[in-house]
Image (tube, rainbow, N blue to C red; front, side):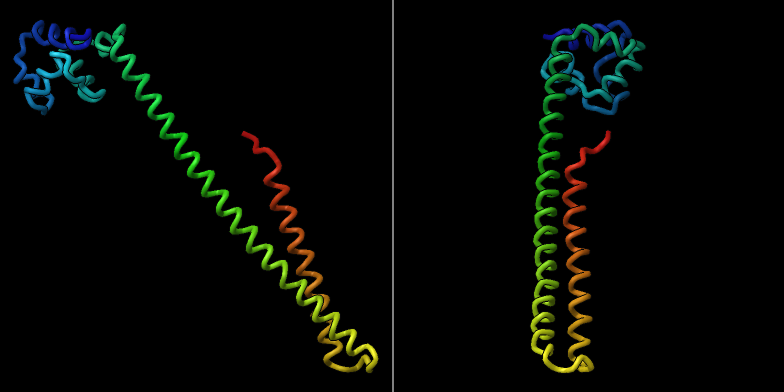
Length: 171
């Protein structure tokens, strides 16, 4: 029997309560009270707080210098840290996957201006020996200008995306 179970039983007897009376106060079964007092299980923090009120004992009396309770707290802390690290890894994987998808989309979009530039240059080269008044020549020239501007914007987007990922966050 551990220290907490002994303290719970002594506090109940000191108040002159039966296990059933305490169980009714806490809205648990009498078997739960018996299990706590025999050291087979421990009450959760909520029930431990209620027990402290029912017995008019400070909660600290039940928790202080209780090695098994300290072990449970340490075990719960380690479990929480494992769970937190697992969530953190999943979030990092999700961010990496989104970053990969964005990079692929940016590369595909980066090909569009290049293809537009190549076709515009070809059209201008084909039309160069003809007159500059041809509507096809002017549309090719405008298409070339738009392609160059889009290429510059995409380059800026790619550079800024990777630049901001290199800057350490301030926290």
